[in-house]
Image 1: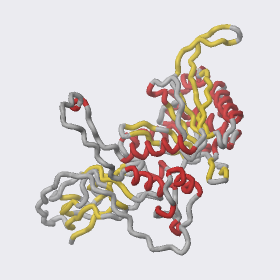
Image 2: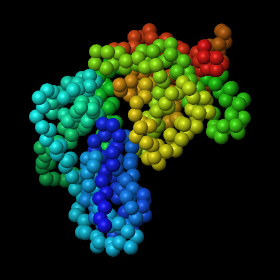
Image 3: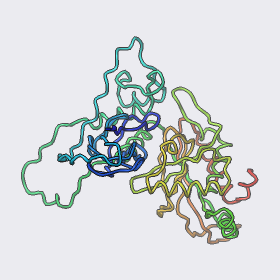
Image 4: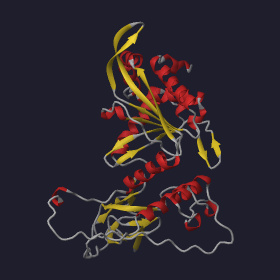
Length: 402
């Protein structure tokens, strides 16, 4: 019996994926649920397992090609004793064109459009009537607009013919196609610049209190909870206290409305070889220091192995990015739209500071808050950063929530 291998559902607003690589070749025997092919979406790499034991008969889509959700990837001959079909000669892989969207029947009324999607489409000069909606009742969502922007960017352009002649620099250049994740990062960073009125304010924190607390309790903490006590849990706790005091930093603009969020899903930026991903700590205000450290450690391990789930990367009300792990002394982090705030942590350096009229050497860190000035006023942004500074310099505030 021949079974079809198709692209599974990939989550809300994700309508297509790129074939990253096949883990098996035609003629290979496979076990039930054994990974056959890796698909790359906007955020994560997804493995498609074998639907049953048998032999991979045919590969329909080559690496580098884009395929819609539900599209046919290949076929499998079911049964442990299935006869392997001889491998078909593989043509030179070529980037396949994106599948042509199925024509939509004429509508008596225009499809509904989410306010944030309408604004993004207007800024990109794309009519919403030309975008197929993936939401309920055909509603056009932000993800649909992003896909349309990406499709337009990938349209064939007239080729520039370079005159024949020596090219001494050619051997020193390498051209590779951008990964789907990298293209998405580029689109969303540009979207943040085009959409939000972004501004950054800075402060510095004396990390003596936090470092002393860690030094005193780190061994006991690790023995009891099985995870090291890092800096990130202190920053998450400090940001939540500040977000509760300045709720606009935890909100977002949607159309002509401000959405204030009375929950705290904190995104933690994690760097990988493929690019930056931002898994989300759900309900972070209800997590203990140990819970936060365990989840961040787990996110980091699975991010490096491309094992994060799509739902773990969606949503989020505020983001924290730690450039200090790479040695950054100061930066202006870019908003993770549609969020209105992102905190940047940096390298801790021993610096001379004035304490009670005397110069002392203290471990200091610059912190930066980038915010959407359309929603967050300068006074609120500065107050937010001062509250974070106070909580870190007097870490007992984090326990007392004062």
